[in-house]
Structures are given as C-alpha cells and as structure tokens.
Amino acid sequence: MTGLLDGQSAIVTGSALGLGTAFARALAGQGANVTICDIREEVHDVVSALEEVGVEAQGFVADVGVAEDVRKVVDQHVQRFGGVDVLVSNAGVWRASTATDSLEKALDDYDLVVNTNLKGVYLFGRAVIPHMIAGGGGNIVHVASDHVATCGTPYHRSHEDTPNCPFSGQDPRPTGGGPDMDLYDASKWGINGFTIPWSKALKEHKVRVNGLCMGATDSHMVRTFHEQNPASGILNNAMRAEHVAALMVELIAEGPEGRTGNNINIAVGHPIQLPSPGTPYIYSEVQA
Ligand SMILES: NC(=O)c1ccc[n+]([C@@H]2O[C@H](COP(=O)([O-])OP(=O)(O)OC[C@H]3O[C@@H](n4cnc5c(N)ncnc54)[C@H](O)[C@@H]3O)[C@@H](O)[C@H]2O)c1
Image (cartoon, rainbow, N blue to C red; front, top):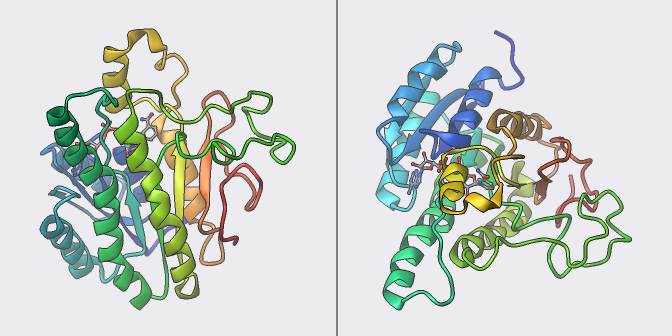
C-alpha cells in the first residue's frame, strides 16, 4: 500500500464511533499505524476494521480527562510505534446546559463537558508534544466546532475582508450554538487557548497545531441532539464524517511546512475543502 502517511503513526481520541472512527479510518487508509481510545468498550471493534486496511492498530478504553489514562495510551503508542507523528484530539461531549440551570446540574455538567472537551485536549497534547519534538515534528489536530470559527470570530463582523465567507451578508454572523450550549461552547472556545500558543511555541520544532471547526456532521452526537431538538432539522443537511476526515488527512499531508495555528472552518452546505492558508476564512495567527 502506498499512502500519504506511510511510516507515520497517529493517535485518535474518542474513536469508538462517530467522527473519531472516521478520522482513524482515514489515517489508516493513508498508511498510518493508529492507536485509538475511548471510554466505550466498542473501541476494540474498530481496531480490527483498521487492521483490515493493512496497518497496525491498537485500542484502549481510556478517559481523555484522566491523566493516568492519557499517559498509558501515549506510552503504549510510543512503545509500539517508536514515536507519535499525529494526534487527533477528537473526544468530545455535548450536554444541554444553560445559564438558568440549577447549580447542582451546572457543576455536574461543567465537570463532564470541560474535563472531556478541554482538559482532554490539554492532557493529550502535553503528553505527545515531547515525543513529537524528539521525532523532529508532528501534527496536532484539535476538533473544535463551527461555534468557534465562522469565517473569523463573532467580534469580527466586517464582510469586506471575508468575501468568500459562506455567511457573508448575514449580520450578525451566526456563531455559537445557542442558549443551551454554554459549557460546550466555552470548552470549544477554550481550545483556542491551546491551538494558538502551542502553534507559536512549537513552530520551530515543526509541530503544527490546527483546529477543525466544522458544522453539523452526522454522528451519534448529532443524532442525540436531534432527538432532543427534532425541530432543529439538523440531520437534513449534516455533513458526512468521512468527508470531514478526508479534509483532516489533507491538512496533515501538507507536511512540515504546512499551515499552523489555523482554525479550518467547514460549513454545512458548502464545499468541504481546505482553504488556502491565510485566507480570511480562518482565524489565523501563525501562517504556514
Ligand atoms: N458531529 C458534529 O456535528 C460535530 C460538529 C462540530 C464538532 N464536533 C466535535 O467532534 C468531536 C466528535 O464528535 P462526534 O459528533 O463524533 O460525537 P460522538 O458522540 O458521535 O462521538 C464522540 C466519541 O467520544 C467518546 N468520548 C466521550 N467522552 C470521552 C472521554 N472522556 N474519553 C474518551 N472518549 C470519550 C464517545 O464515547 C464517543 O465515542 C467532538 O469533539 C465534537 O464536539 C462534532
């Protein structure tokens, strides 16, 4: 097999189903050996599907918000594959949470959502970075949300400098997930606090750090959301996970000189394609 990522190895978190499985399959399809982890036992079923592609794969039941679990996954990966070339920090949860919830519910939701969506990204990133530096480079992909980047940021209102924005002409530009997504959005916004500083700190080590900020993509999470909000119509136009995953591979395949510090916005109803680096489509601090 000849693939874009032959000889590389990747870790994908939250990969028992949904986007995580699609990311792992796409990486394996390009020749990367893959370690996957999830809190669900079904993660083991995905391993055999990856091996069928012809790469080596292993799976662990692990919680991305627990430092010991993260260390175990990364140690086992390095032991087997000799280093880490790619990390896709995909594990994430959504739970309806609003400013008027009881404090008891709010604290419970906070622990679940922030520990998974934000602390998990931090712990995994910090665990792989030394290995990537030692190996001469790597790629970290943070799976964020279009709530974070829709052709810029919510306070970035001018349409003149975003001529290709799919939301051009809409003012205010639609960002954020609505009133019952405070913790989800806070956790996803928080990821910027890792994407941007890490991309700057690690540029000299050829470790690229980017965010994928996609809109509704058909998955267990989106179907759960739809069950709670059937009028949302979210499933009607949802993107397919394998298309988003193909874009993620394209991003990694840019190689060591590729873009870093970018949030890649992928909008429902628009072509799923990598924008040229530095276009105003993306909230960008560090260019390729
Ligand atoms: N589907 C969408 O429309 C969409 C849009 C934007 C962003 N995202 C993000 O994409 C990522 C994947 O979402 P999805 O739609 O595939 O969701 P999903 O619920 O279908 O899958 C998420 C996976 O993460 C796992 N997981 C949850 N908590 C975990 C933990 N603590 N440790 C390890 N694994 C854990 C789950 O068990 C599940 O297998 C998430 O970060 C989500 O926020 C999804």
